Amino acid sequence: MKKRKIPMRKSVVSGEMKPKKELVRITRSKEGEVSLDPSGKKPGRGAYVALEPEEIKRAWENRILDRVLETTLTDDFYQELLAYVEHQKARNELFGNE
Image (tube, rainbow, N blue to C red):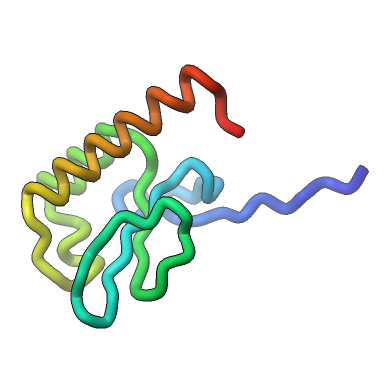
């Protein structure tokens, strides 16, 4: 059997290359609206962050996503992102990574 190519992406926080499934994409639309993009298909400027709560906290403290996406993000957005990442990590530990 031929091995499938695994798409790799770079986390904007740690700078590590990881499989796309281990990251979450955050997008900024042309209108300046920032949102989570779990499917990875929304149009706009995208940034990837690992599904690790420590990495989200570091991004929040240093305002890394604000700089990368060239906008100002609210604490509510970072809180939502942290909750999403913690949920996904717990889900992956329970069911395994598909």
